[in-house]
Image 1 (cartoon, helix red, strand yellow):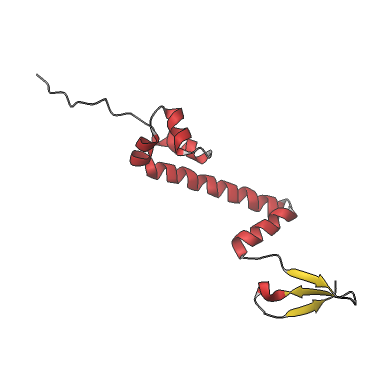
Image 2 (cartoon, rainbow, N blue to C red):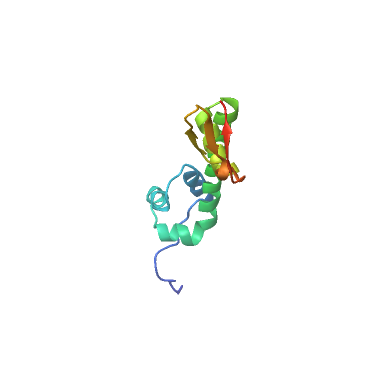
Length: 118
């Protein structure tokens, strides 16, 4: 007589499917719903696959953002990428009574506000 292990049978989940779903931006709960299992099961057994899928998503998004900024000349995306990856910030400026524009360059690390004529 064969002794039963007890409990329900172990789910057979495909790592490739989990990576693809995570790459499409689904949360753990959404992936679990699609695969008819619990989010805890996914996190316990397939955390590496979830991480891999989300890393692939991040790479795809960055590639698309850089393409939009550099190849398509999207000014808004150029500014956003500069802020995110290069630490650039919007500088404060004011217009003096003589019409000069004074840029507060403290945000850019030099410390003093200097006039700039544009």
